[in-house]
Length: 93
Ligand SMILES: [Zn+2]
Ligand SMILES: [Zn+2]
Image (cartoon, rainbow, N blue to C red; front, top):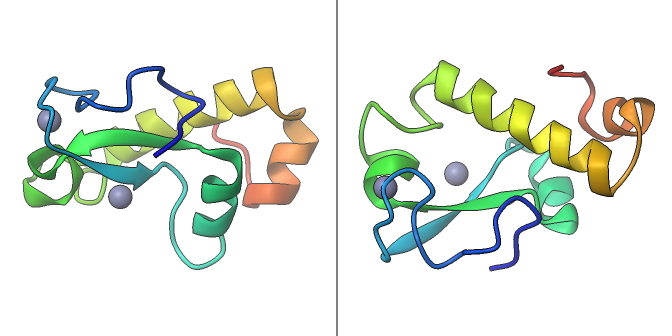
């Protein structure tokens, strides 16, 4: 996987576990392809991806924290806020 959020894509961003899956910070039908295109992804172990209550697919606070992070990096590296709104439908900042 490639990520513009982290340099180390080999370890879970939450716990350092080297057994990782790729999480698209913006997901769902409309957004996943754009997250893929811009590499707005993070490495997460199964527990911290989908396998526990403490993961972005089940915990809205974790999901929103990652989206704020993702938008911040998008605005540093890809485009401005109106570009972001156009791509992802709303601003999280
Ligand atoms: Zn983890
Ligand atoms: Zn995911």
